[in-house]
Length: 164
Image 1 (cartoon, one colour):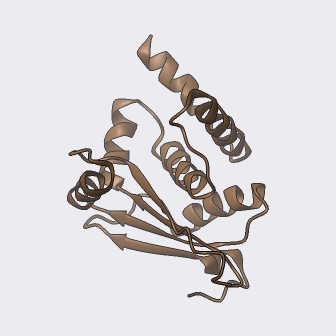
Image 2 (cartoon, helix red, strand yellow; image 1 turned 90 degrees about the horizontal axis):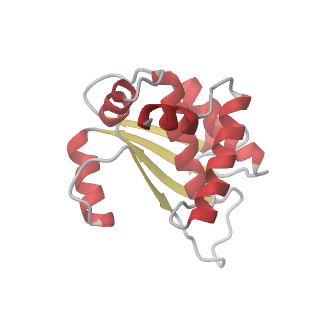
């Protein structure tokens, strides 16, 4: 485990895809840190960027959906008996190929979509969900708030405009 004296030290970024990432590690860390700070959390987490095949396999194994997806979140759920200085939140798996495709199809700026999906993954690790409408509303409200702090537009307004 990392020594988390600085928040950035608590974020393990793994790149396991062929193409270089279209965004900087510093941006990813900024988005994660903003989300954690908003929730007064100091925690350790891993972001793993993978190819379409790996995310499709994980999606099939853990969600029983036989297709690639943009993001998966795996909370650590460590037992309370395990005492560590900085809680291990879990792992976020992101597929850059899917994000790029979604960004093009939905006419969304790539950096805005990346920020949204990274924040979305961190919120899942913090306990947010979107299965029930009430929970989805709470999660979307937090995403919109955090994205606005970063200077990005409400991604759900863009979806509404596309579907009209």
